[in-house]
Length: 97
Image (cartoon, one colour):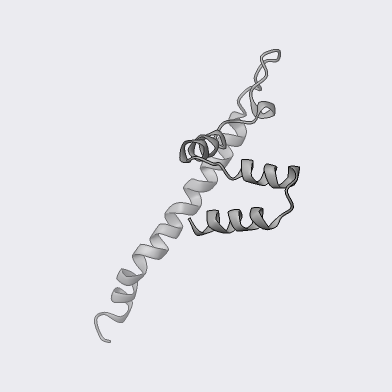
């Protein structure tokens, strides 16, 4: 509301020409228009859509297997390090702290 009043005050200070009219016309923004523009931001860009004239690329199963195998090696070790260190510390000091 304050921004709208400031925009009107700025528009009133400008000379009466096309720039002032464009500024006044541009300030009429509704909530529905803002929500619609926000939702359109999630739509894929026309150049990002899959082309109809060409075939899709085949799946690269080798790369998928490599990525999953690397994750299967890393994640259990990290999980054990984060969640298991208190138990290891307890067993190392044998309750003598």
